[in-house]
Image (cartoon, rainbow, N blue to C red):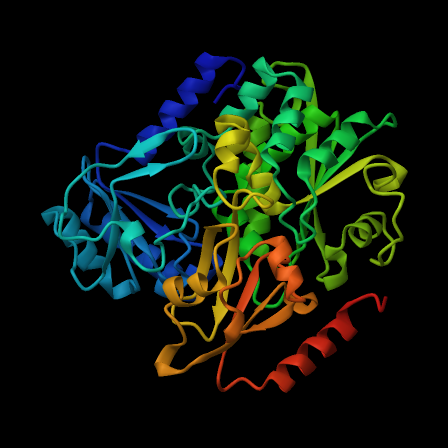
Amino acid sequence: MPRIQDIGSFNAVREAGLAKLLPSIPRITVGMGTCGRGNGAEEVYHALNEAIQRGGLDVLLAGVGCFGACFQEPLVAVRLPGAPLVILKRVQAHDAARILEGVSTAVMPPDLIDCKIEEWDHITGTLRYGQGYPEIATWNTLPFFKGQKKIVLRNCGLINPSDIEEYIAVGGYQALYKVLIDARPESVIEQIKASRLRGRGGAGFLTGNKWDFLAKAKAEPKYIICNADEGDPGAYMNRNEIEGDPHALLEGMIIGAYVTGASEGIIYVRAEYPLAVRRLNRAIEQAREYGLLGTNILDRGFNFNIEMVQGAGAFVCGEETALIASLEGFAGRPRPRPPYPAQKGLYGKPTDINNVETWYNIAPIVTRGAGWFAETGSVKSPGTKVFSLVGKVTNTGLVEMPLGTPLKSFIYDIGEGAPNGRHVKAVQTGGPSGGCIPVEMLDTPVDYESLAQLGSIMGSGGMVVMDEDNCMVDVARYFVEFTHSESCGK
């Protein structure tokens, strides 16, 4: 495929991707994130592939990321031409023959059916799968998905993360094209500032202000860093986001680099995330091949490269100054601020660090506008936040909700409470640095200020539910020991 240099070549790639997402023959996808693989998705994929090959069937088979409903894995999605996308739950390898029989008869095995998707908003355009199957529930009417708004997770579980053409088919790199062709860098920074997007790594600092500081810095070179060192127990949002949609991360970083004048980008990711690392490496290679990363991006004279560095798993390296020390080859220990990284960061040069999820919000804001983004969430905390809902709760998985949603909505509406008739005792937010919020306070809105008033934090988005069998003394002991072992001691 030639490099993308103009709107004609861009549209050609988009059409090639749409032909894969909405083909004229049946398409089957298997959720191949870490959660799916852990529940047997690889065996399901191989069983389907062997049956398709053995029968000489005209069926497309692809792997995708996690759709969020981890408690229902392995998930398989089937789309017949002109029909809705039907999602099947808890599929096993021995179900392959039944699924392929359903493809030929247009009747899926009823015991496997979870929900359907007729159309999907990928931010840059609506993908219409088809209509029909009135007896099957629409995805957003199920308790787990009701109320969710997928901005960050807009593509996860629906596109092949290893295929750049499918990402471009659902509007990928459209925001980057818009910025490089039409926009002035300062106007994009003002748009990010107007959106009031706050860093999703825990501190909640305004992203636009960070970018403004970096853009105005005089020293060269400038660096931008993605902090993918996700270390909170029970948190796996960043891992799944990268596994399911790695190009969205790259697009956000490339836009950020262009408007701030950065020439080098680094993704600092945990070595314990091998699948995310593999898919990110593939995405970086493809972005370079298609002229979206490297030298003379989109033929606009803009040069920017991204390097990936694997961290050794030190919890403290999630703190930005410790992360910078680690990148420089020193022990990962926090440094006093000021000076802040935007003034004096990596190798003493101006540096911007943003969390994975922050970068995922950039393209939607550029495409839809700051006003659209601010319509969701609360006044001080616009937008959505992805949480990993785990622990003693019936429905576990990744949940993306508007900021300001009460805690009880996560626990009782989406999670459907504790399993086996048990009673919820507390929910821990913010990882080891956060706190355990008792059931009496679950009316609290989930945003930066409200959780801080309770003595907890939102952190990167881990949400661990505890029931009546959990001893809070043991919980406190565990997190004190964890912090003592993993932190810098300050």
